[in-house]
Length: 300
Image (cartoon, rainbow, N blue to C red):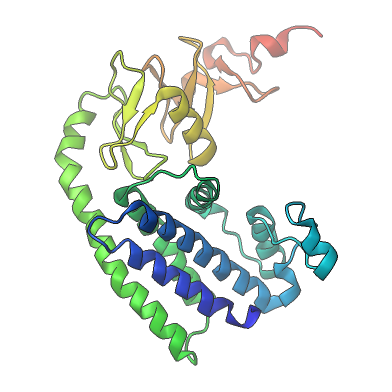
């Protein structure tokens, strides 16, 4: 099986992009597209690891979900994504941490399919596919040798050809919403759109209103501020969430240039707020010249 990892990976990737090429894909096509996308990416990473040594793609941990397999065959559990990344770094010198946000998004969608909890649309899934596509192309060009493999080359060429359609689809969608998003940002309490944790586009205008929800202009996903703050802090490149110093709600995020609260719609400059030096979990006013929050200053 290891000798066909590249071929199997490219077959999965071709199936993923092909299923999204339908004008209105049904839920089965959407699910299988995510399934094949993550399977293809995972096999691609395993192929690079197996090039160092075939034993690297197996875990030393026993498969607790299928213990009979371990007893009867001696097979080890498959690598989880964390172990796969660590081995790529240890044995291949590869650091893919900067792609965590998109790889983890696709992996989590894959896991939701396994537990029948996945919901998605063509816009959302195609956007994720386009977001991860540069990583796939870069990985194949740098770490896979297709020069003497005409079948794998043909698979990849077919995938690239269909991807041109998806790239155009996303470009057209961005152009379609551009004017609407710009008008919404004029009313937003934060000058830039927040990245959507569903479609991964910078397309959530932070419009102050009595409704505690925010909507993505790109994929139309609507999320309660608590869930949005949590997903932005755990899955995307934002720091937080923290308890707000103004309203006490757990909705403050640190963006690239400001602090923002998704609950009370307040913003602060970087220098106005600091993170407690002791617990790292609470915020303090920088002008008070104290590096510790009130809880950490209390005697034990």
